[in-house]
Image 1 (cartoon, rainbow, N blue to C red):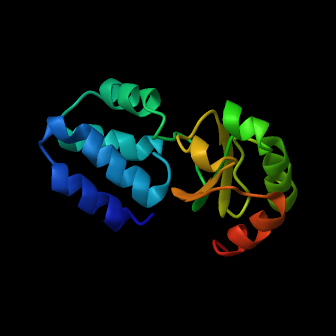
Image 2 (image 1 turned 135 degrees about the horizontal axis):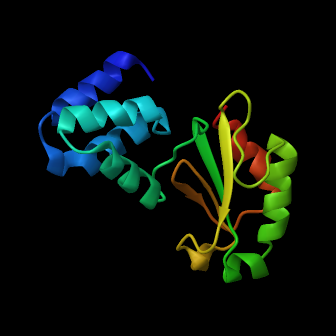
Length: 150
């Protein structure tokens, strides 16, 4: 993420402590994670204690304090997806990307995660890439989906 883009986001919310979450969401969306130095800049500009910024950033799952890939790949492991083959989907994603749950590749292209119930049980098993849902997924179709994000 460019320093100019971070500065533009921060300036948009300067002096507005009630906009802390909005500023962090925009930075997370653009950068895929929240570097500590950027959180210090946000705290200074919005005139809030750094501890408050850290508390928000570490509380909400939407924020990451570690670098993430440009594309986030999720396999639902909730009960319905599990019963319909989520383990096979997970194994195929791991095979294709070389990642296990919670890892990001060296090129920062993909971050892989599993999660219980992603909210679409009627189309289980499910793969989600960058928020796009791929339902009734099979291991054979995963490679084609991931190639769209290279």
